[in-house]
Length: 209
Image 1: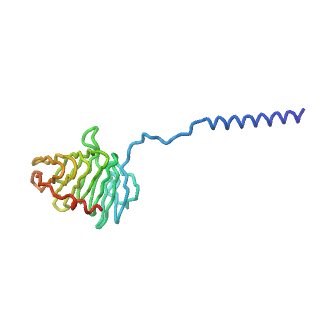
Image 2: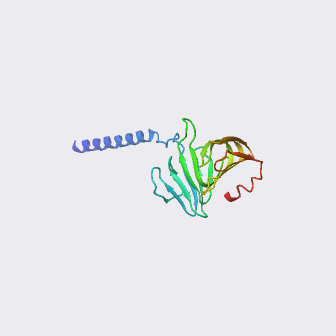
Image 3: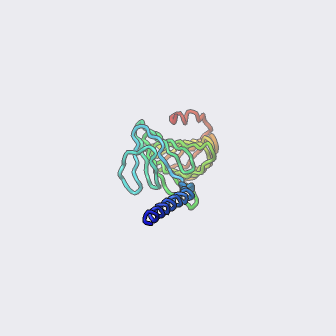
């Protein structure tokens, strides 16, 4: 009888284990969330690239694939460059001696603002027109387009916007000007923005190659 009881207990344990395994197999495997908010990512670095986290003045070496947050600042040294992937999948290339801050939108529902304090930045999106707010020491605007270059002189703040594809209203306290594809807008200290004639844009983006 004792042997029979032990055999019955062993069989019961085996049946319970098999049932548990079957139940485990039937459970769906958790999947990674697909609705995660898009992130701003520092894709590539060349030379000296530093990041100052939001709310600090401490510049630390940047890392490839580093996630950037609102309020973070990016700085590139001489002969250095960086590439940033924005939340709408636009690619932004940052030239050397550039200081850029990621700022919150000025109005609800708008995209983030890029505050270019000095240097140059080139942005393109091959999929769809990008809506992007920007600010420099002398002007601001909201661009809807797929490709443009923005440069700011570190000493004077002189701003030059070359709109390769898109449209924008460039403005400051002195006035505003509307630009279309192929136009270039220039803002000098104490002056209203002005538009220049279309130019050969191939020379403008040569530094990004």
